[in-house]
Image 1 (cartoon, rainbow, N blue to C red):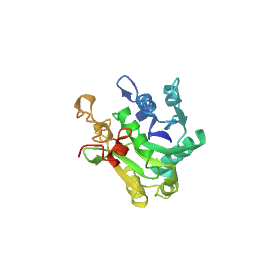
Image 2 (image 1 turned 180 degrees about the horizontal axis):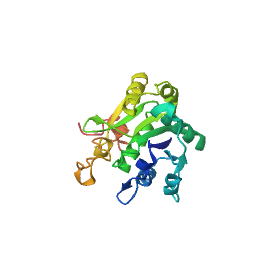
Image 3 (image 1 turned 120 degrees about the vertical axis):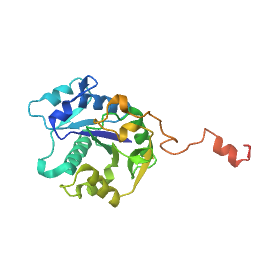
Length: 218
């Protein structure tokens, strides 16, 4: 399974905003890469080349955004198409608004792991039951994403998408999936971690065989 990260910023200023001493998109690229996403793409306006410059010496790819009239969904589709052009075997992409700066790399890993046994389901990370971002969208549902109206904002794009395709919530115990750049790092709730394996419970090697043979205690 190959899962891309598509980091989306509506403005160059937002992409370059100082975040713990580095440009915002640089931090997000490092988080995505650490979590196992590949390829990592950044879509943002970049009138003077500063965003692309901030991505130098990283594994990220800068992508020019879709025309403004394409709306937020057009940017999402553009990012997915660039990811698929970069790695043909991409099976899903993470839609990651650049304002979501506190997402932990463990959350990215959890979503990728959950995608493996559930490859056709949109996966929404949650903290204490509240779904947030980034959202993992299988490539198989790119057509459904394209069908969403361009005048909708990202949360509404997601509402329309999950109404049309299979989806589920993955509890990751990461407050960063719902707390954005408007929350200071010092004010973030504590990271809890997922209550269960993201891909579902798996027995230790041989445990299921032993159980079937009646060799385990009741």
